[in-house]
Length: 102
Image (tube, one colour):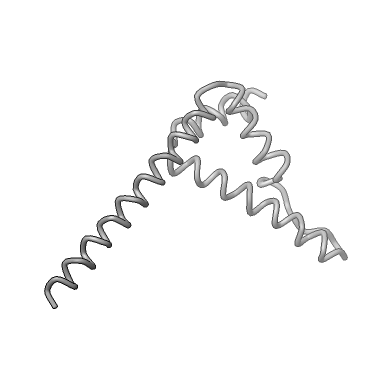
């Protein structure tokens, strides 16, 4: 019985370590993209222009287009939240270079 509990604890610790490794790897990916002005410009364009996160999604009288726009907006918001969580300073730098000076 105690061996089963120990095995469960070991498995839980492994899963936690694996999740942390995945988070760290993804953070390195975000850092790589945001390390250069070109990457920050591309990501800003994707989130704010293509996914229109700062604009209204609603299309009057066209619920299908509204839903489509909201799907794109949701992707853009997820990108931004991921950047903010992993590298807040790079997010601010991206905004400084593209939103405030662009």
